[in-house]
Length: 130
Image (cartoon, rainbow, N blue to C red):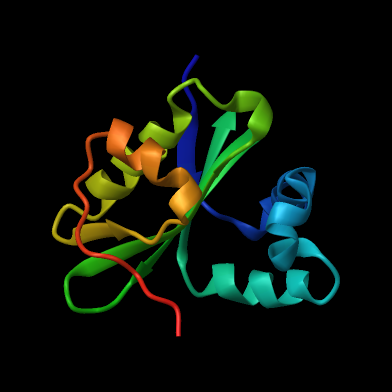
């Protein structure tokens, strides 16, 4: 089964945040309390693609353009009930196709490095937190 990916629209806000809440504390910085309003502002200022299986939201990817020919994938989430179906890879391919004139980089946590390696992406340095 495939998904249809299209740009974020405010009409999906409640469904979007319900998906984040199902992820629990791991994604609470995005949805809990005042964080929801902050993240609504974040997604309004980024490129966000949503993936749907029928009318069910199954995941999203959030991208930032640095204005110099580089795009950065900031968030990638596939609803836990829809994982292991290749949807994460579809999101990545969609971003690359949508930004064909840019280099695309992933800012990912260490626990997801295996996913990106399985997709065949190459490591380009490291990210450090100050």
